[in-house]
Image 1 (cartoon, rainbow, N blue to C red):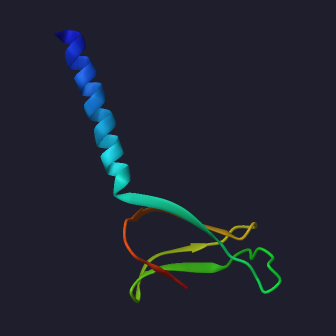
Image 2 (cartoon, helix red, strand yellow):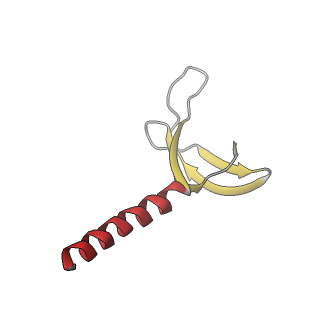
Length: 77
């Protein structure tokens, strides 16, 4: 019975971790200039309608990273 309880707890913990991650997502946006070169230090806004949800700055490779964003429909500016 003890082995079964430990296995059940392990399964429940894995299930809870999976359920928590299903509500959020992470993604990257690459910011390029008119010559298709990466833009360092560009401000990128994630918008829900006109309301800013998160703001980040692109890195030296032009990548702006958004982490733990709730699932939904968004615009970028």
